[in-house]
Length: 340
Image (cartoon, rainbow, N blue to C red):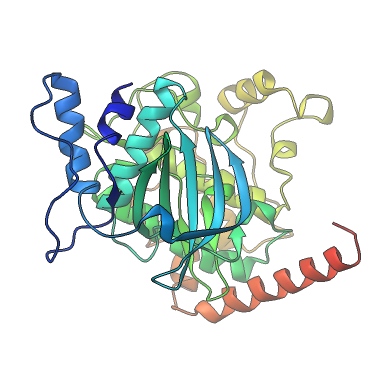
């Protein structure tokens, strides 16, 4: 009800524009203290710009989950292709909090390694969040990624997380499906619904995707930015093994039993990449990210200095671009043959 009450006063919103007046904002006359506090945040996010519902032409559904549906759409006036997340407000209070968190972080961020936020609007009891469309999709849909491509993807992911950390934001849900690529070779992080503003570099809540959580999070301990570092390691281990991440932890009979998976993450030694299949630099990078003790993992400013990252920090987006384009062509060919 709180989110619905706030958004009922809003018509359109995007990033601030000095040329625009702050109209259609949440009024100051609301008496509920928590509502006033939240509405103050909304004023910065939902008060300017001109992305209207009638200017959005929906094209196809891209995905569904976590309380909403994501569509590919075109902004008719701006001639821009968007990804629009449509979320009904008859959802749990926890999901409403996640919407607020995502809006605040998207609004705050301005980085080439974070998905670009274009605005949001509220209509017919639904909120729609408009971000840039990444035509390559997320990493989880790709087959095994070559190391020379993965290295450049890792550079962008680490830069994106370093940017978030500079704002004292912990992502808390780092995983392949939240890493997006496009045919221009860009790599960007998305989905900040469970992210949190760090207080003294420590967080306490238990949110995120279990399989990618660091041991200290699963154990219910306090955690900080080093928890995201663990998730970076397990994410890249998964994509270099073509999505077979669970086999790194468990015997076949236990692969799809979540409780056993969590117990293994907490109690067993972290998995190690075979040096026969990967470079020493990559193996060392993953091993460092997945140290059991948080303080033994690289600090955020040290990740960029690792030899695996420096090797591929050459700004060569063409490598990722060519790989994405080739994979998309192969996927279209398979679809034409009815294989997928």
